[in-house]
Amino acid sequence: MILLVASAQQTRAALKPLIAASGYDVTDIDCDEAIDQRMRFRMPLAVIIDCGIPDSFDLLAKIRADVHSHAVPVVMFSSDDQNLRDKALLKGADSYVPKGSLDWAELIAEIRRFAGPPPRPSDN
Image (cartoon, rainbow, N blue to C red; front, top):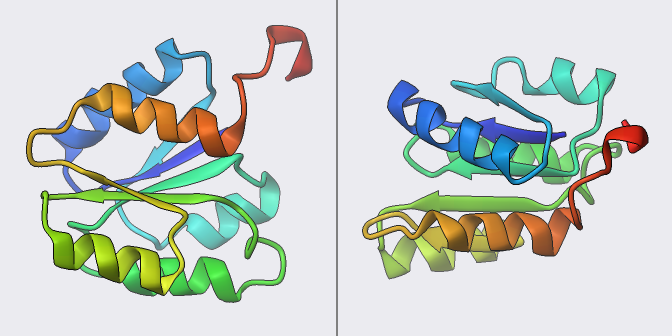
C-alpha cells in the first residue's frame, strides 16, 4: 500500500487513480492526524507527502522518529523550489519531486524506485 498525504482534494483526486493504475494499492489522507493509526494497522510500502500541508515536515519527523516506520521510504513533492527540495532531503525524505511543472511519471518512477514493483494481485 502507498500512503498519499495531501491536503488539496484535487491533488488526491489526481494522484490516487494514477498510483492505482500503476498497480499499487493506495490510501489517501488529507493531513497527518490519521497516519499513526493507519501505519499501525498496515505499514505502507512508501509514503508520499505534499509539502503544501502545513505540518509536512513535522509529519516527516514523526515517521522518521517512530521505531516501526523510520525505514519506510518517504517521497515529498511541492512547487519547484530548491529550498524545499534541500529541506526535504536534509530532514530525511528519500526523494523530492517538484510539482510546479510536475510530470506525474517522475513521481510514479520514484514510487517504483523505493516501493519496488507493484505487487501481483496474488501477493495482496
